[in-house]
Length: 590
Image 1 (tube, rainbow, N blue to C red):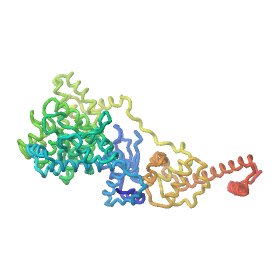
Image 2 (cartoon, rainbow, N blue to C red):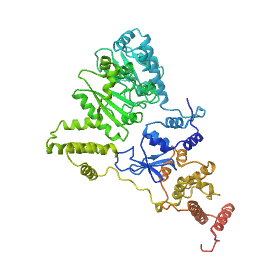
Image 3 (tube, helix red, strand yellow):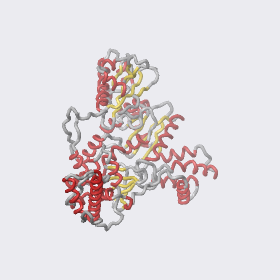
Image 4 (spheres, one colour):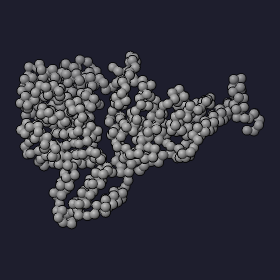
């Protein structure tokens, strides 16, 4: 098992990569003075309050308070764990992540054993497809669906044989492993606590992989007419249906540069597409397409095509997908809808008409704008003024969900054209209606300089310009605990003098997981109010002020102790030195 990632490597990594590049590929940024801005990806807003500092290598949203480093961004935006985020950035920088040796006392990953167990289960199911006495039934089913052994192997398809405890008996050798089988949903504990049984029995098994190719769950398809037809793994520590997409990992492996993703409804549809060399199909896992799904897709490709049955249920599902797509449709992202003939699904249709004709249908899929306006207009009489007014009223909340973009403006112009009204006036009216609502978020102001204590002020200056620490010749604090926050300031100064060249983002990573981290992060987005401030003089003045404050507190403490009992020789000498530092002598009245 890999050990801890050395802090020195994280320091180097965060000086090599640029947080602007990391975020801009996921959330398009615009230059705004010295910083970059965008609408926050972590909450819904119309006016950009999300800022990224290239100098500090730090992001902050004044609306929702989200903030952090490039590592933090990947953890929040991509739902990565810390090691995974570091690996991703290291790949970007062309670095290999080192790991320290693991000692017996080192804390172990809580999730890795679950990934290992799920991978072992996938291996068990693959083996059963090759060797179980009843495997012929599964193989015949797959052949009847037109699958070759090559495609079945590419998707690691397996077979859960009939029987209540095949997997349990094979993998559940000890109590810890049996607990993992229950946690991942591979087995179910009996209600009377008398034992457990396999969740998947007599089913074709489709392993579900995350973006790194790790097995996180399974989908099982019955061989006969039993119900449910498809059975999915339940949510677990490592499996979240609203984030994962079946086939996305395989698509990224098969196509070097993906330009388009086709979203279908079932596992067999994905595999059937691959059988016909259409290697860019994915499926949701028994849920509607979520915003998390869409963000993941649009970080991979600029175009997403949703494929649904052409009946009422299919169109209702398509409308839900449209509603979820609106908030993520920034410029450069496209969504379209492919409706299949009645009685067909992607699997049957591609076998009937072949790859070329099916891809032609994909190319001619309905753009989201057409689907939206055609759907609304089909329920109204747009030849009348009343009908067109209702169209505007029904379209307004949908268009309000779009990010501020050229596409948003073009959708307003399209609505104005259908409603026979002026686009400028319509845009102003829609904006006024949006602004009249109670605000969803109120941007928080950065704390004023006057509100900071000298300690907070000094820490904020060092986070704003870490190089200031190099000019501090002496850290003049005899007691770090006498003033709140002084220990943190001293530790920060010592770090920056020991490791000059760290940027703000790298500094913050030194405190990851510690209680002080939240205080540092709050101060990291502060900028001086006056551009012409002599920051070095400002910092030295604050340190001198703090030194005097520490001195006065110690003098007061010693004098108070003296009232209780005589000071020893060491304390008397300390008091004398402190009074001399203050520029006073006993009895002077100072």
